[in-house]
Image (cartoon, rainbow, N blue to C red; front, side):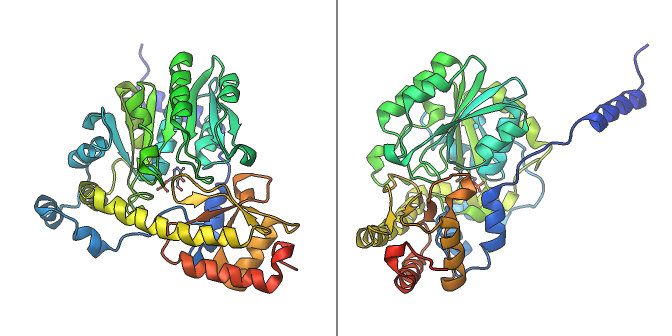
Length: 401
Ligand SMILES: Cc1ncc(COP(=O)(O)O)c(C=O)c1O
């Protein structure tokens, strides 16, 4: 006779009780930000673009969206995302339909749900590194084996397609590429991108393209076609936080032609947020409808800051060196000299109230640090950094203690 409901629930509970608790590594970058983000005067390592004031976002609204905002009822919304928002997101792509978009609470929830859906114990993933930790540690937490595809400063942080080809195996379920890249600002050239797409198609792996810095290319003609547009194996990850300067909305998305995969991923969301924030969905729709103005504002902030940083690196070649980012709002310079970057960053924040993010937070052994250039206080932060360098002796590479 079939087991009764209580018996079945009991068995399921017993299975859960014997299951190892999910172990996921501490998110090093987030722990560092938890300590410092709201305690320092200048965040010279933030990856987002200066957040919009609320009033300025509402001023972007067309008549329809003004009405939506005024009449918004704060109930649950559709789990896959509010239809108007999915429509606007789909229009960022050339081939994606609204029902090929899933809305999430930031890109972070999208990574969590997709990786958890895609990967299990027998699977393998290749992931660009150094990089955003959840792109590889959620995979590991799901039991998958991860091969890191190391980007190296000597190569201008470029992806090495030959190496990547050798890293892919029959069990490779997904190739994860973050481009434009955090923390290096790397953007593959078109030939490399096409090669990656071809590799995913030949191997049958998914290409998970973390494109959260897309639309922030220094030269817009370098913009790559989105992963989801160029292959049915492509999964594009986007977010309002970076190019669209609205991190506080916590709205991100995944786009893909693989509807079966999306159908599975949305079930994962039932266990995380169920649906996204209703006000944030409306505000995101407003910003995406005004995307040209929003992106122009972000680009103007980043461009002005790059002028300041170009001068900083030109003036101090004995202390600081970088591969100039081709896109995005972060770069990964190196502190020259003998002072370890962790000590330098710790002294700098105490002495000057300026926060850098040491490469160690990415598990990177070099003397690199992430610098962020999306915030409007960057000229002040750089002036403080320079004052500090002058005080401690530039030639020693900084800190003296
Ligand atoms: C490459 C990359 N992917 C995903 C995210 C997550 O974006 P969000 O914090 O808006 O969810 C970030 C944030 O820094 C990132 O740099």
